[in-house]
Image (cartoon, rainbow, N blue to C red; front, side, top):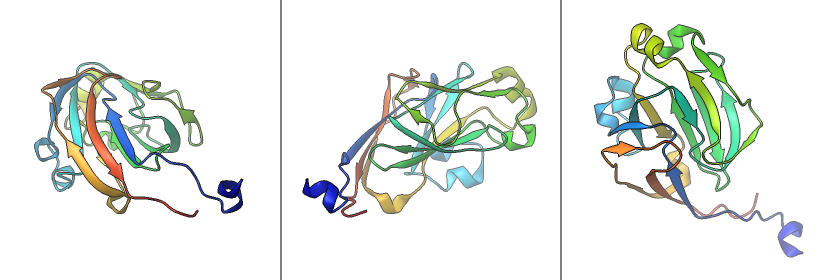
Length: 169
């Protein structure tokens, strides 16, 4: 009763981020783009083996970028993360990308979000390497990133993130 009265929101304090793609796992400093390399410690990247992206967490789609190359997800815990498919894919203007979700949609971990033509990304973009970025460091108390050599989409845990307590809304 008092939770609703005080508008407290129950949230988990820890989030396990599973791999949204299958492929070789890279540290952020291995991404072939200087902007992403500066984000070392705030994410991980995948060199994809296929062109399917699934949700790495249970949550809600905050934003699907017009060019469909990037998606912002807010986990049930409140953790904000972004999946940026490839490097310099914004210039493809959505060519070869098919989305299955829109902003406002609720998603579950492992649910398909976007398909993309991997060969087309390899041809038209700088790289298909896909960063998974924790985009709001103020939310994070602690991050445990222990990248395996290879990840399996929808199954392999990539990061464990301890969320700062949220308190009143």
